[in-house]
Image (cartoon, rainbow over all chains, first blue to last red):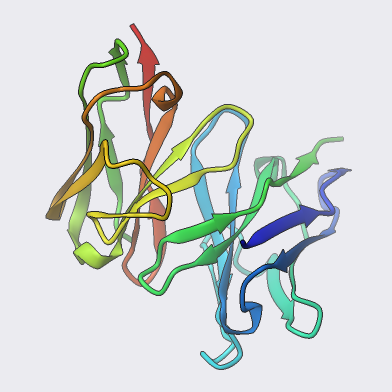
Amino acid sequence: EGQLVESGGDLVKPGGSLRLSCAASGFHFTNAYMNWVRQAPGKGLEWVGRIKSRPGGGTTDYAAPVKGRFTISRDDSKNMLYLQVNGLEAEDTAMYYCAWERPEGSFELWGQGTMVTVSS
Amino acid sequence: EIVLTQSPGTLSLSPGERATLSCRASQSVRSSYLAWYQQKPGQAPRLLIYGASSRATGIPDRFSGSGSGTDFTLTITRLEPEDFAVYYCQQYGGSFTFGPGTKVDIK
């Protein structure tokens, strides 16, 4: 059975940076399209970005609010997904989830999330 | 970007009742690319329905999805105590968007 475990969340000051990690197991990570989704406290879900599998082109896409500040990468040799977050703003405060994308664009498997808090 | 609107915002029902949740899109969504999720407090979302009407693995058959174009529905035929949660619809039409959610709470 598949599992995703996020880590790396922390309290950071505005303008700061973090690297979030997501460890995958129990499914063929190399062929998986992987996403990051976030949820501000008490709010709804917001898609952050996606990285396609290397066989699928390995390209990335981002939501407008994070484009240019966030970078998604992957290490297939380690079954790891990453989210580099730079230039953090208070509005980036959220639980960050990694999610495995099904072929038709739904998110089949989610991690438990890692919390990022941006505050001075 | 396709915007999803969900109604009602809150649905107050009793166990055993039927729940009907609506998701409306600002433009047509390919049915293959409409999903529903359940989220309970302190937990990650769980995929319920993909492709507008296909149940995900392990999802009870009291959950069903229907609809096409711009109007989609999630139906829970008989609410169980564990079904009281927030439900989100989501679409993929080149980019991903979620609806704001419908909270199903106990009347």
